[in-house]
Length: 240
Image (cartoon, rainbow, N blue to C red; front, side, top):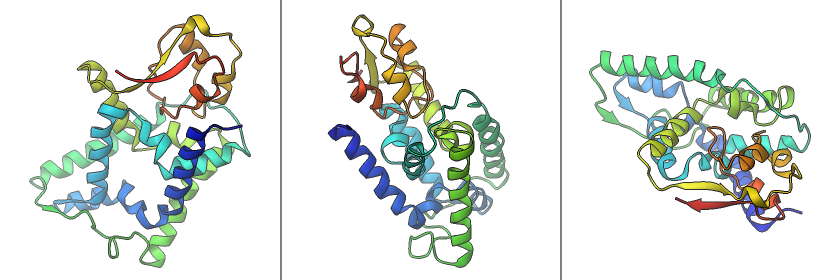
């Protein structure tokens, strides 16, 4: 039976997924390109910057506690519970050309001149036309279909253009030693029941991480599932 923390986390994810149609433009990889071409700082630009800044203190916790894409994927795990073992590099092959193109556009057009966080929205909402609705369902398909075909949170592992911002932010925080939310382990307590590894929604080798006393992993989203399923409390949260 799930504990209170996981119930709260999943409840938040359900809520963010329900409001996703109204806000998905703020996560758009295309609108940031279109806006950059016009010298405009769009809503997605602001959101991606906030993700990077937030990751300095909270790693990829956004992915586990707020992201609407995470919410629907965790529900799919109840139907299709297949581990994802490799392919994490794919999102970098998507992100690097994309972010490079945005940088080139910004330089070519003389930088940004206008801040418009509601760019291309209708009164701040994303769904304002049949075209926007079609775009939403296309994005939703990109999130849902891989989860069924490839496995747990495939979108997070293989496609997500937002994850690299947080991965880079986390690595920078570790490099300059910024106190941040982390997992800690007590390997001497571990009884090797494999529960943490089995329950991890990101398919991480958590038991191995505990054994090595190294809980840092670029794909860890700090959801706390391993903590809340460890009966002997060999894993926990700390701000360090």
